[in-house]
Amino acid sequence: MTDSAATENPLTVAAMTGSVLKNSATRASAIVWAALVIFTLLSFVLGGEHVVDNGKLAAAIVLGIGAIKIRLVGLHFMELRHAPVALRAVFEVYCVLLFTALMGIYLFA
Amino acid sequence: MSSADLRAPSATVQRVMAYSALAFCAIYGAGILLANFIPPPSPDDSAAEISAFYAENTGRIRTGTLLMMLGGATMIPFFAVLTLQMRRIRGHFDGLCLAQLLAGGIAVWVFTLPPIIFAVAAFRPGQDENVTQMLNDLGWFLFVWNLGTVTVQAIVIAVAIFSDRNPEPVFPRWVAYLNVWVAVGFLPGAMLTYFKTGIMAWDGLLAFWLAAVLFFSWILVLFWATLRAINREAVGTGSTQPHPETSGVPG
Amino acid sequence: MTAEVETPPEAKARSGHVPGEPGLWVFLLGDMVVFGIFFGTISVLRARHTEEFVTSQQTLHLHWGVVNTIILLTSSLFVVIGMHLARARHHRAPLFFLAAVVCGLMFAGVKAIEYTSLVQDHHTASVNDFYTYYFMFTGIHLGHVVLGMGALLVASRVARPTSTGTHRMAALEGVASFWHLVDLLWIMLFATLYLVR
Image 1 (cartoon, rainbow over the protein chains, first blue to last red):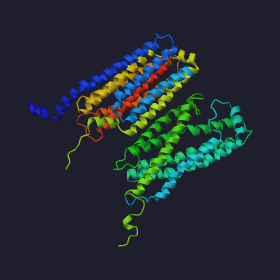
Image 2 (cartoon, one colour; image 1 turned 90 degrees about the vertical axis):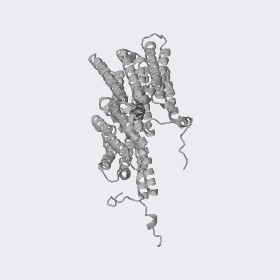
Image 3 (cartoon, one colour; image 1 turned 90 degrees about the horizontal axis):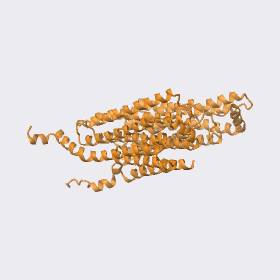
Image 4 (cartoon, chains in turn brown, green, cyan; image 1 turned 135 degrees about the vertical axis):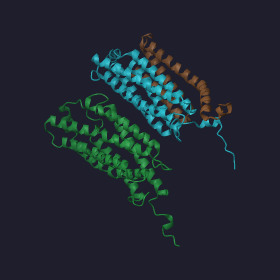
């Protein structure tokens, strides 16, 4: 197949575009994934394995990490970073409210 | 719309039929409150406690359930006009419309039967406590454990809205998603048969309160969407009003 | 005849793109609210019956919980990559959606192991409120996982480079968003059930 024929074939173009995409966008997503996994292990160690003695601090860390992870999934995986401000705002408010409510219940209920 | 199709009532009549949903919320809601059913008596209460509840609230329960019984019937015109508007999605009166009509008709009975049972429980003060408790149990099961038909109705409506291929959808698509959410949200209530306390009991956070909020939100959204569809039909080309060119203009 | 003016990227970013379609977010946000009630309920139980809560919590398989969290996070990454590839009509796009389905199966498998182990140790849903909530809420979540897997299977077909349709990307985005929701809900479910003590 000649060069020009190869570049004219839409699937080849797509494949080439795909490999370009696969490098930059995928790398960003993989970084987010790695952060999420690290956060998971962190909350497991700090919250689950009694490393932190103070119960309230441990709860704050676990719930806080949970809220951060949720925000990462929403903004990066669900692509809410590129969503209309209103939708993104609702989501961000949800994350804050969730953390506040659960922490409040832990402390005061 | 085919001319062999049934002739729809005028927009004004349809609007009145739609508003009956608000009448339902007002009358039925007032009845529930009057009967002192908010919050519901606990399934964990003893027969003595339930009998005492009926003895202390006899008048309220009798009048409240009367309102509920009448209020339930006000949903008949609403579900009928909802079906009429759904027909505009499908182009003709098809299986989905029939399913909706069927589910709506059953739903009216779902609303109407429990208050009748509660009224019977309150009918003879001084009867055997266990009889009162069992009638109360029966009423609450009918009132709260009825998610089968309502869930199916919501799914039918969602499917119909999703299937809309008209250039201007009769109902906004988010209404379909709301119906899906409502249908899913009703499902936990199925577990109330296993619980006498907690969030899954008939007076619990999930089985009762969440279901109640979802239910009334659902009715109000359906009301709004149906009214909107009626109004749009009235100004659009598929109008139920006389065509301007034939409305008595000379020549 | 005027030339077609392309929306400059900055303007596009300002107005924003709703993943899937706006109506879908009624359902997704609604689900987040309902699960938020679940998380709150778990937390209230912990606050009111702390000893019983913590004792029961310790019979849970924390390590399996961590494994499941990582499984779902990975499945979400697969879906994200699948979306990128689908946009470029890359032939490997369907593969990544299927990989996410495999993760879903693994998740379900782990839950089956956990459930079986708990039941064998006589920690059933009727023993106390903690176990009721555990089985109920992880069960409802598992139902979402199963639904999501079905949607991902359909998505893997739509993600093929040769598939057509005006709403191809919107449909894929919708399925992807639902799967990320499933991931997101598990994150807090795991935290409140397994970790907070």
